[in-house]
Length: 390
Ligand SMILES: Nc1ncnc2c1ncn2[C@@H]1O[C@H](COP(=O)(O)OP(=O)(O)OP(=O)(O)O)[C@@H](O)[C@H]1O
Ligand SMILES: Nc1nc2c(c(=O)[nH]1)N=C(CO)CN2
Image (tube, rainbow, N blue to C red; front, side, top):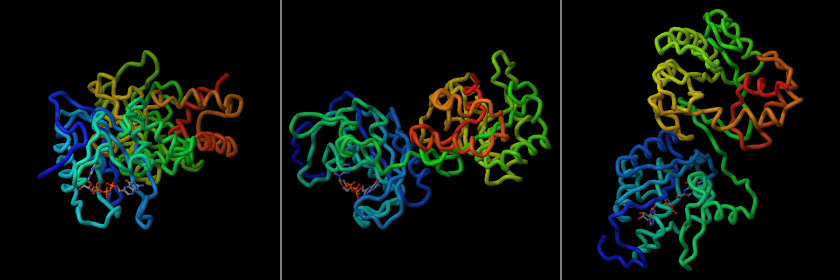
């Protein structure tokens, strides 16, 4: 950087600043690119928050694949120009050619949206903060709104606006935009929120679970159960070897693995299109299950159990095979059980716990998430059933 004329707030302070960065990708494995880019960002800053992931139609140049977008909020003592240099370095690592077609396909794109409440514009436009096109981009504002409702982005007239307000203004007061919230599985499949509800069947490979304890703890019987679920169009099988019944004894990773691995292997082999979910709160068990083909980690303790080492819950950008850092679905936290139970009380109660659910009731369960668009794409079937009991 040679000469630059800053309008305001050019120079760094020793204190740290909150910086919002947006991320996008539409070349190669998009989920992996965004996760790896975040890991790179962690090398130079403290990543405080990450948004959900969104699939979005390309804006400006429409003839290109859909993008995955996300945003993160970082805290750093780096000077603004150093942050720019650092994000450009990340893009370069991903092979991003700075001379490629403007707004064309990109393995990764990182834009600095805001740096604290600074207003900066270099004379050569190498750096403009806040990002000059932020307000016309739902793919920037929607993920940013996940991170912080009260994050204020300054304007040149001295006022400020939150990402939530900017988004609402952009959408003309509507809440729907073109973006689809997605949750990636460990294998990179995208589960779309609000389009169609995936049904999850439960296989408890335990002798003592309160729902089907003792019935599915052998490979042959678990396979029979899986076959029933598949016949009734279930999408996800949740396999667990540790009861969460109040007062249940913690059996330990070795015993849990003994209970679930052979069953997981057999189900993976016989039902390749079913998504397998790990029902465990032990990170080492989840890791091993992922190595055996499980795609979703369903940790009821949201990594807060001692077995998971008390790791922080990881919102939705969670797709790596390193299960110790990853939790995709935490049913309690996202509140699937109560809303569904309340809304459908009297409609789906009494139908039974398992694949016996008749076709029209299954449709009802599927459409309840579709209409709200707010709930995650998976319904934990036994959870729906249990909360619908009178
Ligand atoms: N806030 C900012 N964040 C990132 N780059 C910026 C910013 N302000 C100015 N730039 C400059 O914009 C140039 C082009 O950036 P980039 O390649 O990310 O563009 P783009 O993603 O195709 O388009 P857009 O900037 O509209 O998102 C960069 O070389 C950078 O110097
Ligand atoms: N949906 C979507 N469209 C875009 C994106 C992006 O990240 N998402 N980035 C662009 C240039 O920064 C241009 N268009």
